[in-house]
Picture 1 (cartoon, rainbow, N blue to C red):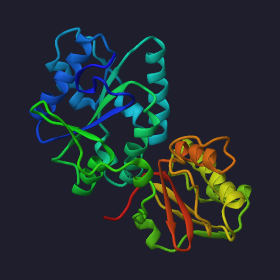
Picture 2 (picture 1 turned 90 degrees about the vertical axis):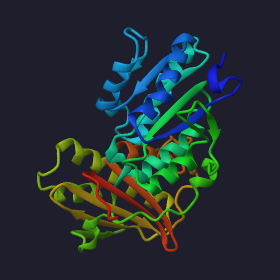
Picture 3 (picture 1 turned 90 degrees about the horizontal axis):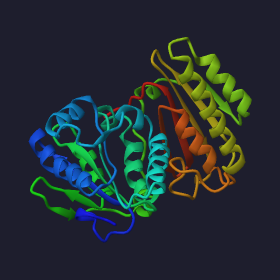
Amino acid sequence: MRTGAAAGHVGYFHEAICYESDEELLAVVLPFLLGGIEAGEPTLVSFGERHAALLRSALPADSGVRFLPGGDVYARPTAAIRSYRRLLAEHVGAGAGQIRIVGELAPAALGATWDWWARYESAINHAYDEFPLWSMCAYDRRITPAPVLADVLRTHPRVALPDGRHLPSETYTDPLVYLTEPRPALPDPIQYTPPLLELVEPSPALARAAVYDADRGHLPPDDVEDLVVAVSETVTNALRHGRRPVALRLWSGPDRIVVTVHDGGDGPKDRFAGLLPTGNGANGGLGLWITHQSCNHVTMHRGTDGFTVRLTGGNAHVTS
């Protein structure tokens, strides 16, 4: 049975909180959490350290609210979807009629890697819709750039306000539309320099070797191995499902390796590719799903000359 603002709703009830003070945040979140506990619903928080401490101090002792390790949950968009779907399925399997979650992204996600988190916020309207979930995603207007706030309102069907109202977002855009819109990837500054390496029609083995050769020992070994997997999967997809020629370019800096893989095709037809596994992987969707779990940032761009995937191992940077 659904309760609160989500009463009578079927599927995912997805709201944004765009607040300007700690008081406004608490005015929305405390009634949401306490209402869930009173209704006997699984009630969870996935906040960073500061806001988690703020909530703990405002909640009654032994409130029953469960705090998740936010940094672990929101490491990468695809991993977040996988983790939450598993968590939601466990609660539904235990008999939950509604699950309440309030969460926030790390401030770093609002910068260089926002593009794939915007895709995440849009895609989860589909990915979680089989569950009786009511969630709130909190965004601090004081530190969130205006373009990001615009995306927040386009990817959340509803907004929750400090005065207790729950209103539809006037600019909400269906994921099947939002995820098809062209979004040119902002360049990483390292791409303004000549690439360290350019390969045409590389085999996956040659692409893997190129990443290993480019590593100067500056990146953690796990980051290098993850990037090797991602590059191999992306090249394989381009050779199998794209349009020749396939071109790989690689840049290497002190804190990151950036690789682009370009082909002359249109890219995957499934707009959720990368964030959700697609079928049996026959159209490349499974490879992109693996890639999104293996990199610290992935961008995908359809241009007039074809489809480009950019993969970053290490720290992600883009120009403003």
